[in-house]
Amino acid sequence: MSGAEPGPADERRRALLRTARDVAEDLAADAVDRDRAGMPPADEAARLREAGLPAALTPPGPGRGTDWRTGCAVVQEIAAADASVGEILARHYVHTWSGRFYGPARRAAVLEAETARHQWLWAGAVHGPPSPGDTDGPDLTLTPHGDGHTVAGRRRVDTAVTVADQFVADARCAVTGEVLVVRIPRAARGVSAEPRHDRLGQRVAGAGSLVLDGVAVAPAHVLGPGRTTRRRPRPSPRSPLRRSASPCATSASASWRAPSPRPATWAGTRASRTRTTTRARTCC
Image 1 (cartoon, rainbow, N blue to C red):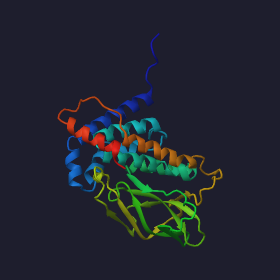
Image 2 (cartoon, one colour; image 1 turned 90 degrees about the vertical axis):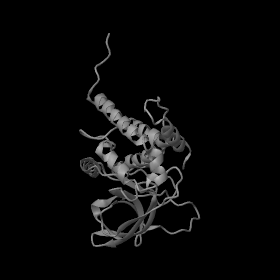
Image 3 (spheres, rainbow, N blue to C red; image 1 turned 135 degrees about the vertical axis):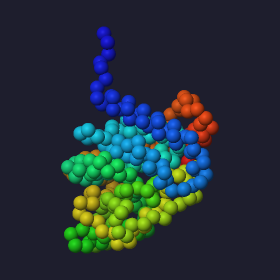
Image 4 (spheres, helix red, strand yellow; image 1 turned 135 degrees about the horizontal axis):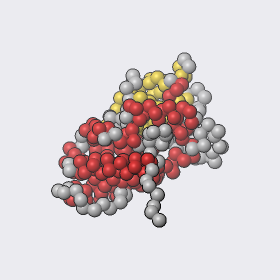
């Protein structure tokens, strides 16, 4: 008895993995030189967009996106060639789920479709709740303004600070004390970036600080509530996936930190792959 014929989903998965391998081969050829140069990852982001990977690595929906298993497999392929670019893609994939993690499904679906259509690259950082006795103030502050807010402060992000199209961050309202998770377009007025170049082996990841100076946050850009304490969270009817945000981030991080070994099929790039794979396994 013959096996079942592969369906459209299987074909899409295979095609996406083939694309990832092609991109990985291209990245492996000059990974070491690019890391030494330590330039912002503009060229790397362009390569990912040219291959359609930012659009493909979004939550699954009608005719778009990919499941978590396939997304992590794509990240592994890229990270085996260039750990920095693997990290960019891994964090992008996690952040594209933010609409589902923090907000209602209908709004998330619209945001995901927009991401795929425009090939937005995502970055950012959502902090966990403060530890008991933590006296540090919030690094991002929301101030009510009209029917929305403005946000100001600095947030350290690990990837794509100068090239991402959308950022996700949580901030505390100066009036109510509520913590909200917001989306910040890179092109918004008052957004700037300060890149870091001291991450040995991960310079091309594009880490740095996101600097926000009275950036307008429209109501549609508020994804949902963040967590304000370490107490056991109450179930949220708006987003049943909210508790999954941290485990999913951990899973994606594991994909770029420890990529699966690959056969030596990339002619002339064995040394480059070995060095970048080692960096992926050891760097923070």
